[in-house]
Image (cartoon, rainbow over all chains, first blue to last red; front, side, top):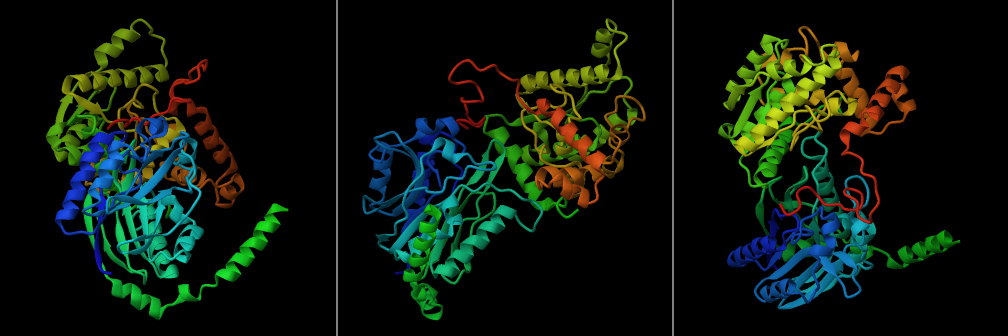
Length: 282
Length: 273
């Protein structure tokens, strides 16, 4: 079905849950008033990104009053948002939840925690262990958190699991100033477009903005159609409220014109992966 | 060198945004910085004026009696060009009264003392004006250690610390820093006629190319030699980086507890901002 998604390109404050939730609620309300069906927020939107030792202090349980409040708000509009999750056994995850009709439809825990260069996520957080597609009012979806998308297998699994829309929540730092636009922005745009084309899926990418300790987050949130075309893209390095009109027809047409996903042979893939797995285990 | 060529429009947007965001988030509107008459501080004052509004930027020229008079004239020219507030605080009385007690001090001690004298003036004005001190050290001098620890290397925020000197030149063109300042030879201005490149023994453009390949691209020594750099030059620069590393770190703390500051007590500086 056709639906309208808003990509809330916000600037969270580092470690300030209360302030961020005020900002988030304000954007949810604005999206609802604008008639949107779904609103996306970036990775760690509730907490900010370079948390380091703040992780345990800002972590929320799924039954916390803060998450409960967001679940309540999802009766009027579907919401995808990132935060730090703490479990009963005190594991801390870089998580994203999809909220709809007053329930948590899906929880994704970031699997690929980058720990290289300027990143240090796995020092502070536990790794998620699954990629699962899930059903929503707008068809079957899959959620990825930032670095997850740089692993082909992640998007592939979600597409094979039936997702036709990939949601990617991101806190991507800008770097590389020797080209026409930011090198990291160009790389992401290429990745999102290629992923959409390979899997005949639409991609909704939501990235934050702002600076933390001199590191900039570049924004550029976008909606990429299943043909790989960027339909709408947010501003670079500035706050934005990107409205994506998602057209069911473009998905249907792409799946008819380029049925690569239909022809994808799961049997061969599994057979070869099992062979490789066995060989590696020897 | 293609790698050192930067998209100056984008770079300007990032650095202006950086100063605006990082100054405002601590609840302050203003910035203060030393203006030497050279290109690095000229570029930073242009960035700050665009980020905060020229009325919120205070530039201070702090000459010593042996400073080239042209430096103060250039500092004034830069301040007028970007419209910031400008004042002159000479450091001769303070520095001379100290060295009256140590008349045999060499140029290095005198230069360091001057740099630290200027630092105390900037941080005093930080309190006076409720303004953050902006640093003006570029990546080339930070890597080579060509600066005074707790002197010109001290600041609250440094917008150009990740730009090589060659990139400082490019961005200065984009931001319309006065031509006289862009074209003149870089100098620490400790004595008349001193130039950085003579003192260092190599040109900024040459060393920037090496630093870019060595530090940013992480090329091996063999690859650097193949790229045309002299092996002694490579070793010399590598040693300079290594031997000045202490200047780029906080003081070393002896660890005795379970949570030692900066080792296993880790928070971003923007914690809660």
